[in-house]
Length: 264
View 1 (cartoon, rainbow, N blue to C red):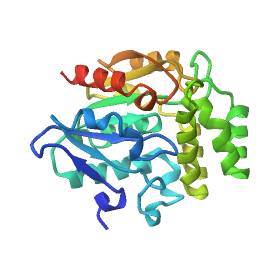
View 2: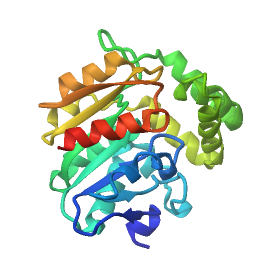
View 3: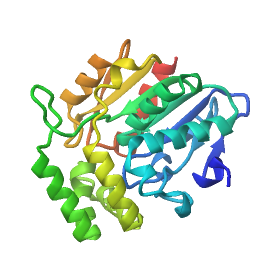
View 4: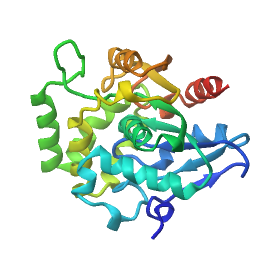
């Protein structure tokens, strides 16, 4: 099976347009881009896909060993982009996919013209002056809850991640997305998401990079966004007038405008 089929790839827009590839965060699928991706279809070739273990990706492709590391997902991404055969792309990654994109760009820089990171966090643990936002006990408690009761974890975490308590339908959508994920794959992906540390990789990036940061994000704080921007050479940081960890869902127009303006 081809990488395009394994990852449930869908392509939109003009054949000759520059290609933008959108990658979702933990527990989601390509449907989370439905408010942003269409804004680029008139002028760009747009690619959407599902990470291993998520959405419509081939369940047989998910490997608990390979995908217990973000490097396994980065290798998947490189395979997928090579099959596109459309030259280097702009990769737009939300949350953990921002780090997957960074690792892939280090592995195969010829596949990328630029990166857009939405709500990135290279490490969720506090470490000295680094404000990851969590202590080890927090992470282990979250992972223990997920191991014990997938649906209870989803119900607890979705409102925290989504934010925007005045719009409960957004958290409900995220909770439903979490619950659709295979529990075994969800546990593997959660552990690699919340325990990986990519801080040492960011200064090695050599592609133009945009960091989009919500002004109030309980998962990846403003301080983390600024830290990422300070580490990625020549990067640009834009703080959106949005709240929550998923501005592409809660503030899609502002998110699309910021990406388009940066692309020029």
